[in-house]
Image 1 (cartoon, rainbow, N blue to C red):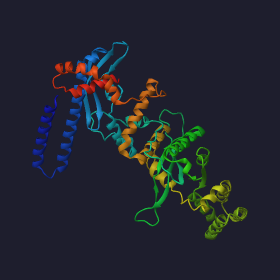
Image 2 (cartoon, rainbow, N blue to C red):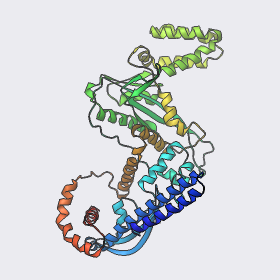
Image 3 (spheres, rainbow, N blue to C red):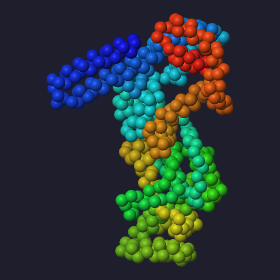
Image 4 (cartoon, helix red, strand yellow):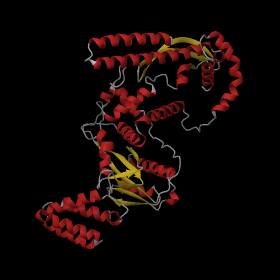
Length: 482
């Protein structure tokens, strides 16, 4: 179907919709949705028409005839952001390898034979899944094909396990860097076929790097992070923890002049995996989070009932004066008169086990608090655990990375992540994921094939009415890259 016919159908549909609208102007909703449906339908038909014309052109192409033979003509439907796109799709057999069958149109488009979605459609679904449930994400595409929750889940799971950081335009020079880290506790869902009776939980980690904090506009108390960058995911055991911190170090090393950094401060709740960051990031020190220190002190002091306020004040004074022995004696006195010893013992263990880190957070004026709890809530918990939900480790890992990716680059860049993930899956299927890729300049490729392409252009134009030299030349050069 040519574009003139498609436009004729579009105009007729718009006129009919306009006539219905004039009959009831108050029903603007129906008018708006009808126009959108017509435009989406036209867009899908037009894209399908273009793809069919490319397939037809390949069938007639002399360069193709020397290398591939036609086996059969099929039609294929792919789900796009504007609806279902149906186009002609011809199966070819290689003359050099008789066992090789391929749809050249799929090769040109860069999609696998089992792929049902365009990159834009997949980006639309994943963007919705970032905010709402898999069930809601199935409804955002105007498709006649059935999209299930499992389909959305597979798209999320298909995101690359490790997402590379964009290379900076210039290397920054800063005196200090700050890394705040924490984790979210996610309920594990084993599935209906699991033999486990009780679901357990696991942690999804988050860390973010920033340069400094500044006052928010319109507020005297609130602070905002400057040039912050997020990392997240389910990294289990020592191997996973090592990979997590290596990703953080790789980002710092590629974006900042390491020789110019005086110190890198890692701030957190004194969890073992957070404190281990100093082992992987050179020139870094660990500092305790004031929020968790305050939480331990409040719980312990509240066991003293009416004396709670005085006890808090005394503990803080001893900490600021760095009088560790006196503080331990004071805690022993609290234990003798407390009804519940557990919170007091927890405070003692926390302070003695992290004394140096506590001293740094209290006496280093460069450190201005820690907002890790808030970031966990907004970046991870909002989607993973704030309401009763169950996740597989793969699903929680990819969703954590997607939420961090959105924070770093914005939703409009998700399509770039999808392209990268598809390419990684393709390389993995072909066994070439660990092979170095050679790069070529486009003009060198065009120059190499210009003479041969020019020889066929006139012949193709003579056999395909309406095909321009530019289109023919473009399709031919794309074919030669397959």
